[in-house]
Amino acid sequence: MSETASPPASAYVGPRRILSGIQASGALHLGNYLGALKRFTQLQDQGAPCFLFVADLHAVTVWQDPKLLAAQTREIAAAYLASGLDPARSVIFPQSAVRAHSELAWIFNCVARLGWLDRMTQFKEKSGKHKERSSVGLYTYPVLQAADILLYKATEVPTGEDQKQHLELTRDIAAKFNGDFEVPGFFPLPEPLTQGPAPRVMSLRDGTAKMSKSDPSDASRINLTDDADVIAGKIRKSKTDMGVMPEPGESLDDRPEVRNLLTIYAALSDRSRDDVIAEFAGQGFGAFKPKLADLAVESLAPVTAEMRRLMADPAEIDRVLKDGASRAAAVADATVAEVKDVVGFWKG
Image (cartoon, rainbow, N blue to C red):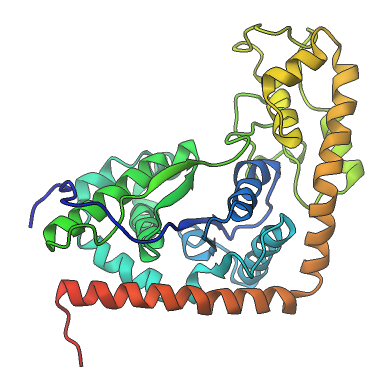
C-alpha cells in the first residue's frame, strides 16, 4: 500500500450530489445564515440533490451537555427548515442516526496517513497549547468529515475558507482508496462550492474577527432567534469609524467594520458590494445603518418566526429528521456495503 494519495486513473461518473452539515452546538447567527443556510436553499431551488446533516458526532469532539445536545440538534434542523429547505427535496438528517458515518470513518482512519493529519491547521488552532488534553476525536475529525462526504459520493461541497484544507484531505483519501484498492473512479474527488453570498461575516464589534457564537459579547452577532428590536439595536450599535460611507473604487483595507456592514447589506439584498457602495457613497452612517437594520429585520424576521414555531413543536422536527435519516441510510449503507466488498471483509 502506498503512503501517498494516488491520482485517479479515471474520473467518477456517478450522479451529482451536494453534501454539507452544521455542528449541533446551538446558537446559529447571521454568519451561518448568509454563509451556509441561504446558499443551501439556493442550491436546492436550482435543482441540486442536497444531503444536509446536523453534525452531532462532530459536536462531541469537545464537551457537549447531554441534556442539551438533542435540543441543539433540533435547533439546527429548525434553522434548515426555516431558511427554506424542503425535506421533500433535500435530505435533512442527524449525523449520528446514520451509523455508516462512523463505520466508514474507521476504514478511512486506516487509509489516511498521520502526516496528513499533522498538517491540519484547525486542530492546532483549536487545541492551542494543550494538545495532550484534546480528544482523539478532535484530531481525527477531518477523517470523519471525509467519511461524511464520500459516504454519499458527494461531488460538490459548500466550503468556507476554514474548511478548504479538510476538503483537500477528503480528496487525498478518496484518491488513495481508489488507487490502493485498484477501483478507479469508485469515489469522486469532490469540488468546493462557494459557501454563500457572504462566505465570511465578521463580528459587529470587531471587523477583523469572524462572527462567532463563542464571542462573549452577544452584541457581536445577530442570532437567528433575535427579535426585530434586538436585530435593529445591534445594527445601530455596530462599530464603524469616524469617516463616511466610501466612494466607488475606494480601498476598504483599513476599514474592516465598514467593509463588513457593506458585505452584509449586499448579501441580504442579493446585490454586489459595489452597487451598495454606489448607492450610499459619501453618506453618513446615520443614513446607512437604519437602512441596513430595516433590511436585516425584513430578511430575518420570517426565518426567526418559523424557527420559533418549529422549536415549539419538536415532534414536527423529529418527523423530518427520522425520515431524512432513513433516506440517508439507504444511500450510506449501500456505499459501506460496496466498500466492505472492495476491502475484502467477510460476508456471511
